[in-house]
Length: 43
Image: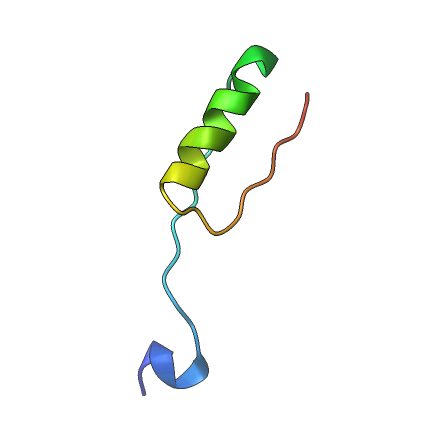
């Protein structure tokens, strides 16, 4: 059986740590690469 039989697809997880002032630029970059989902957390 293949992974596709169960609807499972490969994914890539990337962690970006940056300053708050870069938030808008990071979101724009992610959208330009058709990222399907992202979460931004302030820490």
